[in-house]
Image (tube, rainbow, N blue to C red):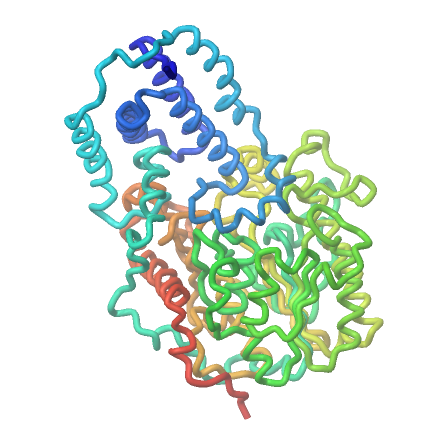
Length: 612
């Protein structure tokens, strides 16, 4: 007869205590605020899971302990890299993990091993302390126990169903076990009813209202368009000197003449990070947040910038130094309107750094392709080298670090962005030699932050160097530059905007009036006010405008939110930001609604028209 192990109150208590201790350690590094509800929620769900394992698995509590320990380990590791917890919906991204494994390994924190290091010794100890019997002699679970388990589950789920909660809020209110239960339930087909959009939100409300020639209209008309998406570039890098060394001299040089530089633009990426930035930039709408649009919506119809430019006679081509399958680009790019996609398979793999072609090699081989293209062309270039963990070969490093910044993420970061900047400078020189520079509009922007403040080391170092508290608003600020050779422009525009504003701003510069597309962004050169709905790395509903910064509380309670007057730096009442909160929520919700329902092709009746 199969043997089993009979648990005692003492061994069961040991498991409970160890789980609670590990949970407290976990919350000390991940939860934004210490709340009694976190502990109560954790204890409640732990009690339910113990009862469930007793009913279903006849008290195999060590199995439960192993499962929870491994979940905490993965969650902690994931949080150190992304700043939030993983979702089962993100299993669709599992194919990308191999490419960024070095980045994930780099963030292995010594604390992370606390969650798993004891599993083997605890297993041996419990095996010695629990008696081996031929047959279970304790009270077996009956119908009453099953009923209690079901009732308990319903009672724990009720707080979730009483209001529409984001997963982020569930974790910070009720704890990590509640978060994963909530996430699992939401993943069940038919449970998540999708995006609820305010009835007052109309499709016409998101058609670009700048359907007229605005200021600076058509100053870049007829030029080739070269768009460079800079990996992990943040706005603080512009004109930033470290230890007497200019980090991005070539970017600074481009900004200093013949350029429009927007210094108040903010990232709006979701779980897809770089790929989501591409989507937002090229479609002027928000991403899906928890899952990548590129990975899940390849069959959608899009009203995108490449498609519009193709209809205007541009040859559209994308360049990326990784494999075509990475983030599903080989399938999504044609859907977005790119005629050609040059990936790693189409290039010479002469210098690989990190998980792709080095920026120097990418730019060199891209230039060779551009020289053979029929003009005008739209070239979309996505760089790679300055990707987390920002480790580049020693011989390619040029920045002399202070001793305290050696072997830090910050130190690696400024080395890698400096390398990327040198590659950019070489590319611009190549454009000049090839005779393409004067006839082109060169656009540069950062895709997302490289150093987030949820990492204490990052926060402390940058707060010290920048002489200002390094927060999410500062981290999510990315540069946007339109460089127009020969224009004599030298403009710094501080209108607040997001990556969704790139599309309509570009159209104004190249002389295309848009009357039909669903564009959530605005032309920043002609906008009467500034606004950026922040997503993913902060709770939805957060926003920045020209006068306020509002970060929704991690528990979803308005009064616990952060609201600051940007002019005075003084905290203001969160309820005074309700107008912006609503606009942010609705803008994001409407974007998701259009994507999930593949509504774009049904709502657009034509293409952009060129102004005579």
